[in-house]
Length: 324
Image 1 (cartoon, rainbow, N blue to C red):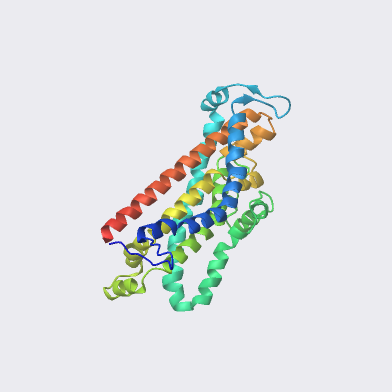
Image 2 (image 1 turned 60 degrees about the horizontal axis):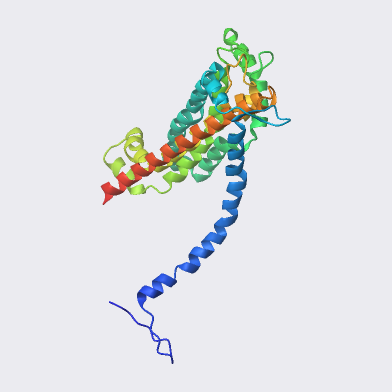
């Protein structure tokens, strides 16, 4: 049906279809104006430097003089570089330390604080505990790294002194200087740094869960673990996807902790792609090769991000289908 509107003395008539065609234009234009600064900043800070870095990766250059075109030589060399592949293997350990372990621990802690501590000790206590867990995220990584280097020092370090004081002096180690355990020591530090982020995200997600679900499960005789497994996990699945994706990306590009704690040592035992690219750039002055490392790392992160977003979208669509 066509709806007409009298426009006064002229007797002009405007159809409903014409009104809808003209109406949304102004809001779209205003949205574009608001987005324009962010789009320009994204291109200036992300896209343009990435394209420049990619261009440099096809050259041989020491940072001064004119770059010499090398084609795919840097990438062919990279594929056979054992140090490069070792750094990526170390990144997988970082994914465990910064994504898998904090996600699991964050889930359990968030559920415990929300479902147990909140009922028995009140919201103020929960807020204080949540802030304590999140504090390492607020600290600059350089400060946290220096403090942990003191704690893990082989001589007079707090951890070794504590082990000695409680009669476990035989467990004293050079935590950051032994190639066999240095990577695990860095992983332990990163678990401590990272755990606050998933905890806060999961506690925010738990706020939207219908309390009647917990009450119904409790009336059915479900204990805390069954309520966690059958109520909490399904309800905050979107938050779990976000945390895993975000933390995995953070793990792949981790740099500051490695730089402060070990500088990739001892003997490359804690080297990761971002630090490997940094040393290739600035210490070895192989700018083209370092650019190739960072380009490959960026592409890997981008591919994983797209896959993660695709899987998340598919899971959300499946849940919508079940609800309808």
